Amino acid sequence: MTKIFLNIIKWKNLLYIAFIQFLFKMFFLHGYGFKTKLSFFDLFLLQLSTVGVLAAGFLINYYARKKEVKFPKYPIQKAKKIGVIIALTSVFIGFILSFNINKPYYGFIGVFNMCVIALYSLYVLKKTIFTNIINSFIKAYSVLLVWWCDLPVNLTTEQWELLFKFQLITIFYISLSFMGNIVRESIKDIININHDYTYNHQTIPIVLGRRRTKTMILIISILTSIVVLGFAISFIQNKFILSTILLLGTFPELYFIYYLLSARSDNDYKALLKKSNIVYTLAVMSIPIIAYYFKYVIK
Image (cartoon, rainbow, N blue to C red; front, side, top):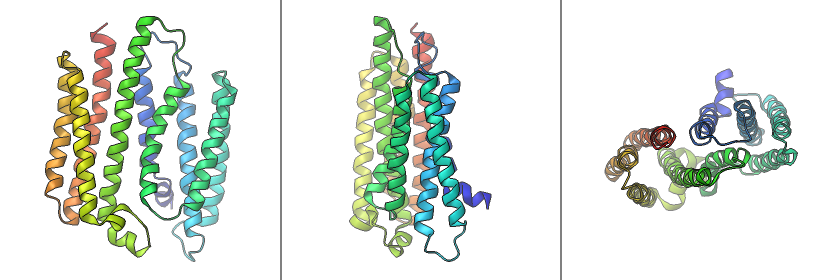
């Protein structure tokens, strides 16, 4: 029963979001002499509030989808009750955080987020193109929350210049994350196309077909490679950052495109999904490497 509950709240995704929030706080906002609003305890509260809101949304969505099913895998009333409790607790934690950083009105951001997630979970019961976009946006939004709540204050001119570079790098990573998530969700939809068709979902492969969806994935992947390569070239005078981006960004993306071109069967797409996860992991690994360079090498 515990395993089913963890699968409902998509615990791996929640851990990933909390990890990414920590990553950007640790490597782009900590240790540069910036005076930031969030301590690491405050960040922990933000992480709890964020994953709590999302977990509540998943439970509410489970209740909305399964309330007509006679024998659901997990009791729907229990899911509803736990979802409401987690939602209220997450909003409360958000208010505690907002008072800790002397920004009481920030607490209403949590209220707004919870309302939007709850409405979305209650009324969007079928997978569509829109759901893929929303799911991809949520992961990017979790990083923006850290920047919003932890924006440094009282910076010198040099610190502002460094912070501006980090903001550009963050936008770069968020954009790549968004496109990468669209690609991965589309591959999953290709793999699950028969199951989704049975339940009347309107995913991208069902609407466009497998071949056109593959073409869309290819176009996004090529655009991503061009963006990564352009970003690397912008640091052409800096051999360390240039080589890091090429090795952990451009080359893995080209490797993914090579296997995408030959993908035909479900097994091919399952293998491609694993390769996509490897590419994404390598991109995440570049964050502490680039941050280390800014923090210790150029100082």
